[in-house]
Image (tube, rainbow, N blue to C red):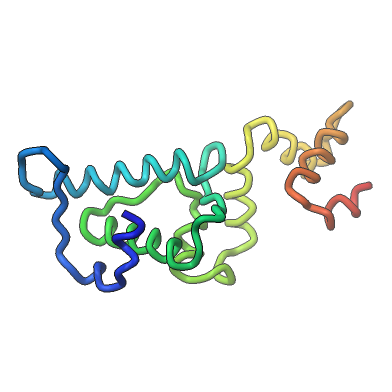
Amino acid sequence: MIPIFKQQDLIERNLMFEYVNEIGSDLDGVSRDVYSSFWIEFLRCSSEGEDCRVPALNSRWQADEWMSIGRIMAKGYQDHQISPLQLSKVTPIIIAFGEETVTSADLFNSFLHFVSQTDRDLIQAALKDDLKGEDKDELLDLLERFHAASILQRIT
């Protein structure tokens, strides 16, 4: 779908999908299945995260491919109200309106759902100044993993 959706005018067209070697016509069911299948595969292979997923950078994909993915998202929603619900809340906001429109609170909340429950608990304990035992070392490891150098400098 990514190569097909590189055509900018697809958003304005009425699209019909069919499966190869399968009898039947597209009365919205096939189209819905195509979009759903795309997002299942995209989230499985091209995104990262725990409770919510974010697109993973891929060296094979450049601006044209990401624009195509944005068109798939827009057309799937426009035609069938299909949206990849597992995507981080901020991802469609960034795609549609730009990074500068995302609030710090929304970004932080999305990050909390991106990391594992264990990491989430650790971050919340640190915010409450309630780190115990080896928790500080685990927090430092977590911050290093996410290249949070400015925060690391403040707490070390």
